[in-house]
Image (cartoon, rainbow, N blue to C red; front, side):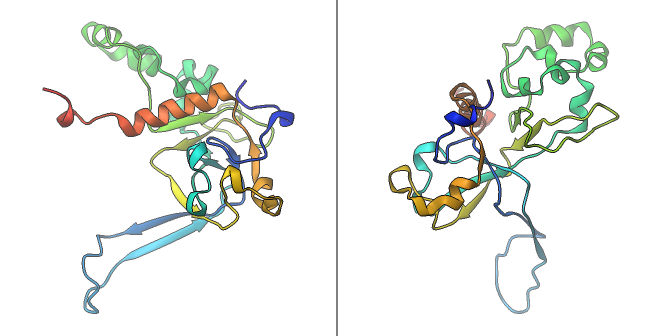
Length: 217
């Protein structure tokens, strides 16, 4: 079960919760602001939107610290995902480690040489896309279509797009009060314990994996 049933939903914000009503922004700059002299022109833009849904990515025990919350907007899947029959059966497979050959479409796999195929099969299971996490369909989500496929209600978050929201109503579990009803009302879906642990593991792996140059010699 991906989501908890409504009668089991906590009256608190948790890691992985689907929420609504929060602003998302994207800042674009041409170059870093290394000086603020009047003679220097800085080219930048800030785009704001209110996504239909966002996901809480603050660890449960840290929610409410400094009245802050880390969020990532739920976005549509990429068109290329629909080329892979293994994923189409269940897009949440991207959330878990899979056999290396399953990460490729049948056509792409057949184009590889026998040696390339054997090299990939010899490797242990791994995450297909480290920075993405797929959310299962929900009646709350708006259906959409890709590449002539049937409409879907799968959505995803991108770990590379995490933003901080500050709000005085965002408080810790111990300090949550009845007047925070608007914060609690923003909560739409609550992950099951198993799925929340799955999200936690992939999120941790994404941020903790060492670069090649830092690996032991």
